[in-house]
Image 1 (cartoon, rainbow, N blue to C red):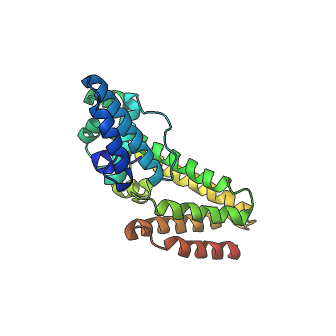
Image 2: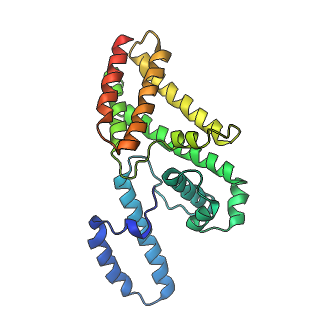
Image 3: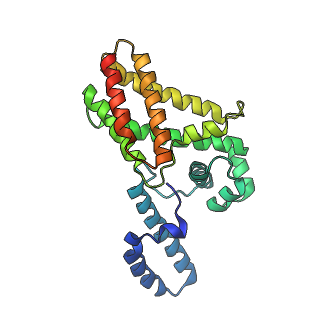
Length: 246
């Protein structure tokens, strides 16, 4: 979930709700209670706003443990601004001590790897779910793949694939622990696409999967640069043509 802070609560759709809550909170006389209630309400509203904006699965319970808060803050910041974001900003956003971050993750590089793993797990789970809910008809499943990408690209805050972005940033550091996570993600996506290719009775499912993955990579990159656009329609047409050839 992308942290929006105060700027996220200025969205026009939330203003009436915020006004009502403000009146309620002004009636509170005990400062400790005020602070606690204010934190809970803002967290709830920010969570609801992010759920409307983002198609990926999000935690349904509050993120309370220091480790989870660190990982949550790091994943958001790294995705939004790149893995060069300093640990001081992560520490501040997670509201933890520096020693807590290093006790849980050991180093910033390991934190980057953990953030990549979390994003990859959520994204792949979301994509599997979007495809599986349409049944087992091959053509329907393939169409669901492109529909899911179209939805993702249209999401506010879309910045491409965190995995692809990090791979570009870390290309000069082959020993970075995040490299293994990047490779694992790529193989997991390839396996998903091979399963789709096999369901289409492709003679060379691995070859078709490679072509589909190349189309997805290109579509994600173009969508990130063009802020969505109609790239999915072109990728869908090329993907369908590739299926027919195989």
